[in-house]
Image (cartoon, rainbow, N blue to C red):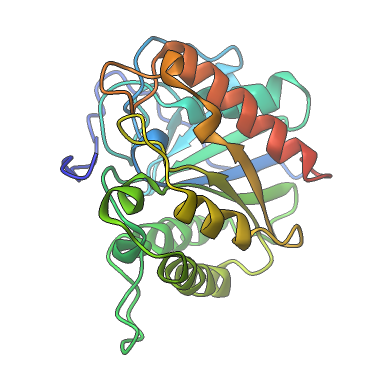
Length: 264
């Protein structure tokens, strides 16, 4: 996971362009998905959305909207992404009428790569992927104050920090720095942070503690325990999710987000 390519999947073959117009009478979720490879296109299996006509993929590179289909545009990898199934579940369960997924996850990244140097006001390179997506949405007239929309940021990251031995204090400081910059761009948007450190069959109590300490149930909520997805949910590398793991990840993140209360 630490050595994966950061190349963003960008093939537009067979992609269906969608209108980005927001219907104020409908409930639309703008779901920014960030972190590393479990939130990228690295899952095996094949998932076709049940609500494909109202499940969209905003491409944070081009600023265009497409029908959501695996692999999602805007993130790394070329396989399946559990966030597709997560968005579909919100629609199936009647929580939202439409979901726009905004993929920003980048495989193999540590928390330090998502933040800029402490001495610099410039955000980290990968953090800028989130800000770029936000700015492109705003350029299309979509902001957290747009009637009918609910925004959320889903954070699935921690395996690389397990691998390199990041301290609890450094992880918390890095996340808070990133959160502060993004929150200034989309204030008061709810964040969901997963307990996620499993890599090659090992977990990190240090990074788990850091992730749990971030949750205040005011603006930062749990996205569930991804480390609870054991080897039966993993591919041969005992890290990335297989088809079973993809479905279980979508279910556990959905349940965690729903437990945070209305409007989820």
